[in-house]
Length: 100
Image 1 (cartoon, rainbow, N blue to C red):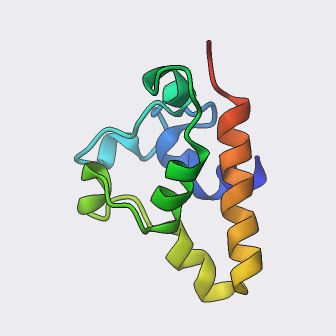
Image 2 (cartoon, rainbow, N blue to C red):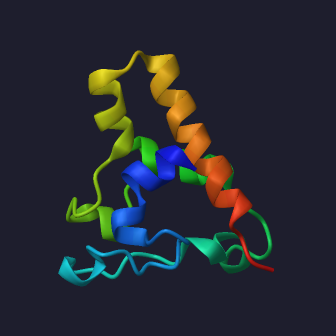
């Protein structure tokens, strides 16, 4: 939750609804992260999310780089294993806020 709050909540909101304080400033509205599994047929795609956060999978919203590619950011200040654990912690938090 701490990694999410410090890196994602400004845009995606404290509850992951896409309504963070910076969301109005972006050209692309941040995704509602509470319905990732629901939008994916009830399956939470942790591997896909890892690639998105890590920066290896490009999606339309990231094409403008409005959202930082956190894998690149984390690897600038942390060893690879720490950066990986930070990404995994964000994914675990996202899984915990999914709605049915």
